[in-house]
Image 1: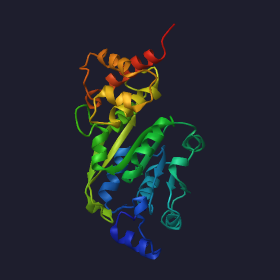
Image 2 (image 1 turned 90 degrees about the horizontal axis):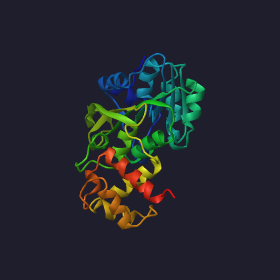
Image 3 (image 1 turned 30 degrees about the vertical axis):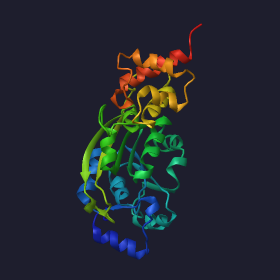
Amino acid sequence: MATLGNPKNTIEILQKYHFNFQKKFGQNFLINTGVLEGIIDAAQIGKEDFVLEIGPGIGTMTQYLCEAARQVVAVEIDTNLIPILSDTLSGYSNVEVMNADILKVDIQKLAGEYNDGNPIKVVANLPYYITTPIIMGLFESHVPIDSITIMVQKEVADRMQEGPGSKEYGALSLAVQYYAKPEIVLTVPPSCFMPQPKVGSAVIRLTRHEKPPVEVKSEKLMFQVIRASFNQRRKTLANGLNNFGAFSIGKEALQECIEALGVPGNIRGEALSLEQFARLSDLIYEKQNPID
């Protein structure tokens, strides 16, 4: 039975192992059963599912996942937590704990071993500094994923579902929306964690698109265009693209591509939609790869 959602039990485990929180790993453990149950519901975990959990901590969410799923693999980077996880998860036979950096784990191999290569579900409580690399690593590697349900800072969750024109809209918004449908399913106040973070959090579910909402000649080029557009946010789109230095055509040709979109020549990247970025990247691709 899952017991760690109770603050008293969490404190007992931490004291038993004389555990010290590691700021570098952004460790904040959930102590609210309602939120834990809400995450399980949001992730739509069922008895046939294989779940990859990133950052299990002391095993609070892991216990809930084990009771809901067929199999769980929990990847924890902090070596000091491994003995604690062995203790708190000792009552479950359907979990494996890996002491590893998730950015170096072969998730494709895990999906093959535990789920016959079928799409997996990912659940995570991520510190701010590692959120984007993990999410983009999962998507860009084209690992078979059904959904990613993650706890992140509220402002990061907001950014993932923002649209053009907002100051929060940026490269992360576009990348997430290209690969998945983002939906904030819970907002979580600092009081639900131990220790309490200084900012509010949110649980966001990213449901993988069967196919991206836009088609492009080069996915890699489109993301270069997106990064270049937001790299110097206050500059015009033309200047941002030209200063980025990744394109083999000059500023004049880049300007022509922008104007071919039917938008003002002095427009900024934050005003373009995903569809417009896709079209712009195709125009640049055609300029860079002219047909003889």
